[in-house]
Structures are given as C-alpha cells and as structure tokens.
Amino acid sequence: GAGVSQTPSNKVTEKGKYVELRCDPISGHTALYWYRQSLGQGPEFLIYFQGTGAADDSGLPNDRFFAVRPEGSVSTLKIQRTERGDSAVYLCASSQQGGNEQFFGPGTRLTVL
Amino acid sequence: GENVEQHPSTLSVQEGDSAVIKCTYSDSASNYFPWYKQELGKGPQLIIDIRSNVGEKKDQRIAVTLNKTAKHFSLHITETQPEDSAVYFCAASRYNTDKLIFGTGTRLQVFP
Image 1 (cartoon, chains in turn blue, cyan):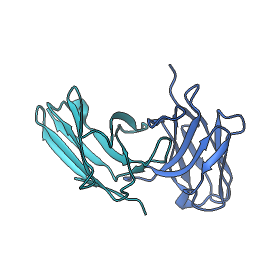
Image 2 (spheres, rainbow over the protein chains, first blue to last red):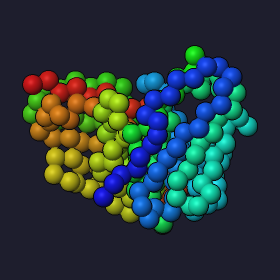
Image 3 (cartoon, helix red, strand yellow):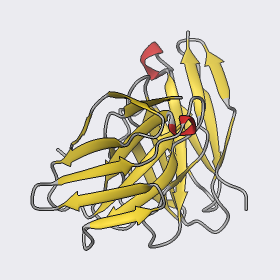
C-alpha cells in the first residue's frame, strides 16, 4: 500500500515568512510524528500525535512552531517568522496504534534564505 | 536527558566483507531499538528492530544484538554489497508509540 507522503518535497522561503508542511500518514495509522533532520545529523523529535491530539510536543523548539491534525489523519506543521536556522529536512512518520515501528516519509527540505 | 551515541561515523568495506555499527544508549528505560537505512534524498527506512526481551535477531544478511546490562546494541551486515552503501541510524525508545532518540549516523561505503 501507499507509504507516508509529504508535500512539498522542497520549500524555499525568505527569512520572516510563514510556511506550512503537510504529511499524509499510512492509512489507518493512528500515531503521527514530526522530526527535523539537520545536515549530517540524526532526526530529532518535534511532536507526536495520537489521533487528533498532540500527545507529546516536548521537541518543538519554540512557539514559532505549531502542528495540527484536525481529523486524525493528515497533519500540518506550521512555522511562523522563519529563521535561517530552521533550514533542515522535516520528516514525518506514522505507526499503528500500540505499535513501535515508525515508517517515515521522504521529507520536506526547507531552505530559509 | 536521553542520548544515543553511534560509532563509527564512517565505515568503508570491500564488497563481501562484514560491517559492524555500534550504539550506546543512556536511558535505562529504553526497550525498543530500531535501525534505519537512509539513502540520499530519501527518508529513513526501517531495516530491523529488536526489543529488550530479546538478545539477538537476524534477518538474512542483517543481524542486531542487544546487551541491556551494558546498554549497547549493534548492527551486523554480512556479505556486504554496493547497494548496502547508505547512512545507517540506530535509535531507542521507551515504550510503544514513544518518540525515537536517534544516533548521529554511520555512513557506510561498500566498494566493489
């Protein structure tokens, strides 16, 4: 079946702008995760949804970052007033209810000029 | 806080040789340890995982071992092939649906 999909694949924006990144999880997966991966590093956790609610948002770096999952499926990561340091690949993963295995999408490469 | 260390950062082997990547975790409550393979421009792909009630798991040319006492786990790839070339990440989590804490990655190059 279809895996996790993310759009756009690439996003270039200017410092101070607002961006939205979208994630479509595997159908039927109730858990959804966002991670951020800087060049040469491992993915770093941002936020985790179980259904519609954010079960753990301890990884969000500051209040410019926000994520939603209004219907328990698609999720949007929103970044306000982007900074050059926000440049990274943003990865989304999903897993089945009660499952450990997280399956990742291809990521969105965000570049803030 | 939770931390996962991974070594080596780069590894070059001849095709057919074995490759071993080692990780150490700090959180003694961790009980799930997946390994991911990431190719250039792609997301991480789960290749094998192990839970704390098991010491070793094998899947064809790939095996993972876990030493909970020492908080070490390792990935072993035998009979390496050029297509095994990628960046490999270890990770750890505490319970089902918990966030993954990743290592810093190992770039594996397999020369034909």
